[in-house]
Length: 69
Image (tube, rainbow, N blue to C red; front, side, top):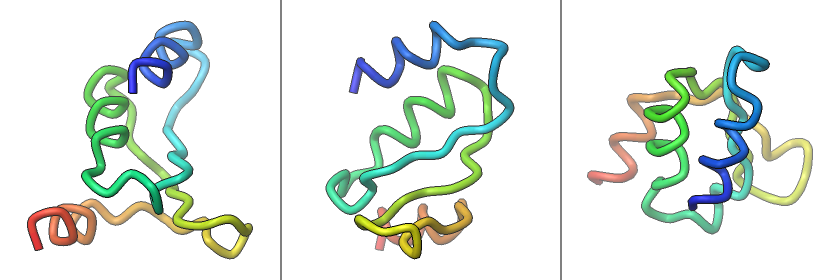
């Protein structure tokens, strides 16, 4: 939501890529689209669950396919 956008603006220039967590509860992917667009930075990893094993490299094609599915 807006919190993540405000945080990205506060740290602008201090990060090279984005890691998005809690993707398991963001069904429409709005956070990824918003932060990547606003920051101009690529999404490197996403978290899809509660454990370290749930962190995976972000695959743009897979993401689009799952949303449009």
